[in-house]
Length: 303
View 1: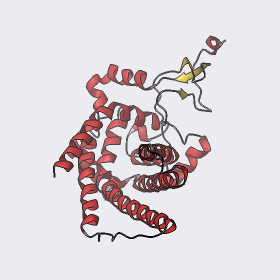
View 2 (view 1 turned 90 degrees about the horizontal axis):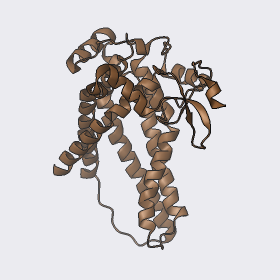
View 3 (view 1 turned 135 degrees about the vertical axis):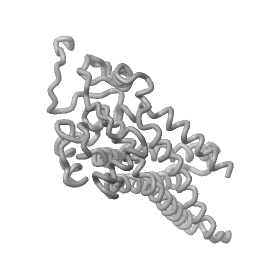
View 4 (view 1 turned 90 degrees about the vertical axis):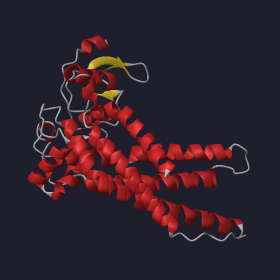
């Protein structure tokens, strides 16, 4: 019980600290660019025309809604985080209660490798079920969070309170409205989890020598590295899910010109891929001007 409470408190603290970052990220994902590009330098030191980064974007939001405005959508996101942590822990506990303890065996190396791979599959499957259940239960709060953020674009007040947002979505879209963008989000989580655990297993088993004293620390780091790599590969699922959650919901940010009306998440995926925008919002610091976009940038300053 104490562990669950500490996880909830830690998760809530991280959610509060990261709220401005997510707010800026969501607005960029839907294509909202209120600030013109500026002349800056890329990672190689070359002068380029680039879009404002996280801090400039956050200052723009604060100049309109104040610093408190940077935490728009925090309440439903906190509810989502707390409920997700509880559901995730309950599902894992359910599997542990019905799990039979494995009897220690003394096999050869080949059998040990095989049993370790089976254990990875078993643990990954269990984690997948726990995450999927948490995502399914908390997705309505995720939808409300995104829509309350995106209404900054059109200065609407349609999704202000948690209860009012629930009533609005149910009245206009029914039950399905609470699960807009769920499928790509679930697929992204599942693919990312399996990629992360599979790559970590391959690296720890075949690339690292267990005989070296520092290998245990390196194996713990490999999980974080493979997790970051997997999240980068599955980012398009996150983008598509967020766009579908706000698409055609009565907000300016979910309608043209910021966003076309998509018929399905596959249609959204294909259109983003065609436009070359599958990584939009992935970077919040070195943001290049998207191909095909026209901005007023004094390129003479680059000479």
